[in-house]
Length: 412
Image 1 (cartoon, helix red, strand yellow):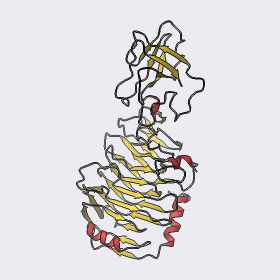
Image 2: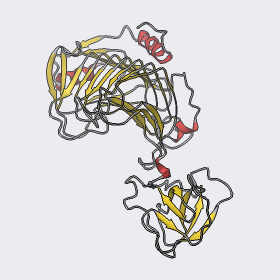
Image 3: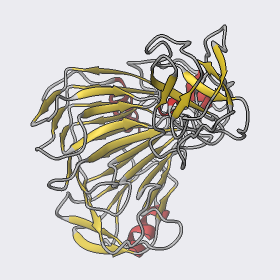
């Protein structure tokens, strides 16, 4: 498909042209020791070629120069991942300021990794907002045991790759924790304090890839938190969808910052999971002109605020009292005492002080007998004297219970 060149890809191509006259060094074989020796001898701008063959690597290849690591194509150069040691990644690129790096033409598969790697089998480590970039293209990732690619503070593009994966094996994790570090700390605060800048190069681009989960199974292709920003376009997904983690279950780390999702093809292939093409638990996004087929029920974009029905470390529950939230002024809107008949996720008061569903969407906050981060819960409905509370969906361990004589207030 012919399209106008995107800004980050143009930038990468320009920088690659600057380094186009670097040397080409060929490793003696695809064995890790030979490739590592050749990488060590390379300097910025060089290309390290890995010959055709199938080799099993049991340790990490660390790359700290701005080079191209080039195989002879998927199906020809095959690296089998059997790294069960520490560091846990198979390849780590530490990008060089103001220079491009590249990974191309290699097939990766699981050669015996026994422990799932959630930190990235291919780890791309960037900087603090300069023009260092990375391109990952024309590679194949075949059922590797973990997150296939982890983008940590880097900008660039992954294009024309094939991913064959099972659930919990994300194709991408995208994090921009330390970028704009002068604005905030290293948890994505800087990304959140900075403008989104949609349409700029300040994103990780994922385009023209094929991502397929196992038959009958369905899972996320991309996940993000720590202020991650990514563009997902012109990809073909089978039994896969997308998500942004929220500022909640990851502790101090902030949610994903922004995503652009357009011109992709989603095929659920009748797999059973959920109806969401993309779930935003935090951040903001642009979703446009995607195609969904074999989807049941109707595909949707979901906005999900987990903190309205469950407590999380540091942030607490969003019940109208947390200092992190924009709470309605004028609260509490009601104060009262529970009576006999209250119980799990139920608050009963004397008399008939309320109209039906008057408090739907508000929250109950315990004012007596409660300490810690879980002192509130969202109200799902109410009668004239009874509040029904939403389930905490397993995030609180034990559902909220009210006993006779416990006091509460209603906030939002």
